[in-house]
Image 1 (tube, rainbow, N blue to C red):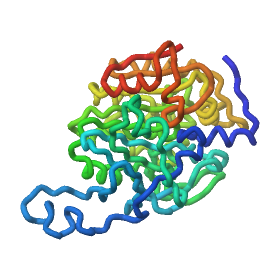
Image 2 (cartoon, rainbow, N blue to C red):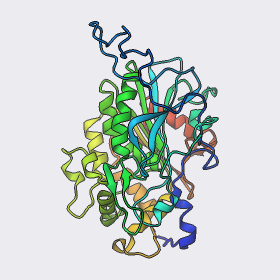
Image 3 (cartoon, rainbow, N blue to C red):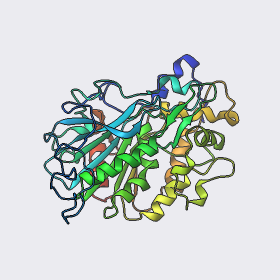
Length: 390
């Protein structure tokens, strides 16, 4: 085992936990559509005689507004906030097939101490979605992409809590105060709109990279419950939740305290609430037991330098001045062999220390033991799960 110690000034770049394009800033924009909320302009349910306004037809709920097929459309959603209190929302790109839906969560680090918060976005950047994410899994013209024909919902990341907080007035020890760590609360609001927009979705994929990979996994039960008639597919790129032997319970307790994670966890998952702060990995077991037929997959490198740095803050009972994590590969295979053991779970591990692949060119070219990553993704979506490793 190797001890990894990073210079403090060099730590901030890995902690960005990016997962968005060949360049971290490449997937930062979408085209077309006003940056405003839908307020009843003649769409169904606004009292103009369409279904749902009291004429006896089924209530269509509150779907997202229409937009041209193939164009990205960003919409601020009432009640959704970034950690600095600014508005949050989502982007949607419609396809011609209303039965296919992918929900993607963006990466971008985490905010739980004075160092990690420095490299984490606190708001959605103006003009973020122009001209749009088109590479990797977003490519809607590449027939090799199993997600080519999917409708896409893109969740920008600005809450600093890997989409899993429920703390509207959070304080970071030694860091920013009065932060809105409401990633999970935002997801609940967004999913109501998403489910109303895609009532015919028969194939639903929840995915994300880095912080968004953690988010897709941590919100899996919430997403699956929003589509109860589907076996929602999970593809987590670079967001492993290790067992307590590797992910320090004291660090897990920091996540619980700063982000108020516990209300976002299934309350009937008793093992998720360890007395010492640990137990978060048991959520993955809970997901397998409660959604046994849904395919799920995890992608990671053996020595992911970004996540190693992130988890390194748990060293020496969370007292290390310089974060270090010396057994990432061991933790990764421990997770595979002792937690992700159901027949519906797949993993794709590679050598090296790289981080995130789905939105990069690696999505089409990366091969491990003769298996292309893009083919592994296609197999997981099809329910053909397998563990791939060097």
